[in-house]
Amino acid sequence: MTIHNAPVFPAGRYGRRRQPDGRRHRAVLVVGAVVAVGAATAIGVRGYQLIGDPDFQPQTIAYEPLSDSAFSVRFQVNLPDGAAAVCSVRARDRAGAVVGRVEAPVPAGAPVQEVVLATSGRGFVGEAVRCRRG
Image (cartoon, rainbow, N blue to C red; front, side):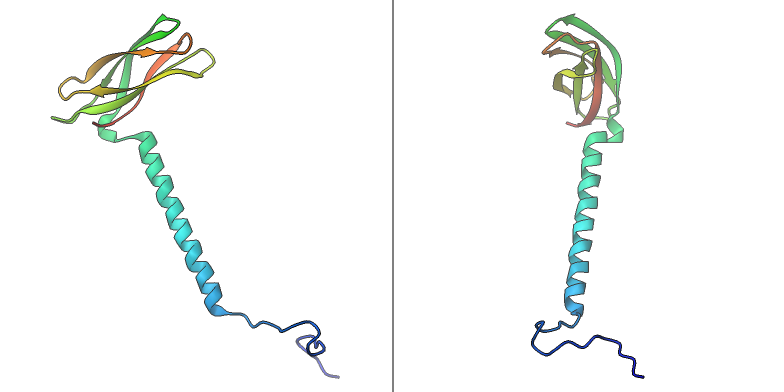
């Protein structure tokens, strides 16, 4: 009794059998690694953009709806010595939808700012979301 490891097919009937190619396998691994590193970098950059610089953390002090189309937000940001910032400030309605947004400059030496936003509806909550070096 003879034991065969691979099936035997008639020659030329099913085309040529391919041998595993180590170079192709390595190329797939390299491309996968490059894609993974690129994705990790993109996620890191986007996360930093969303969170902002820890030296420029804003704190909302007060907010007040002025009308159905205007909203006031007063906020403070910790500024390193001599640094200016730009802060993203928004107003949201009762349902949580953003009805107004503005990028507010914060000059060096003036950490407390009041901003009036134009809104597309009646605002309910105002907040300074994030700040970055300006």
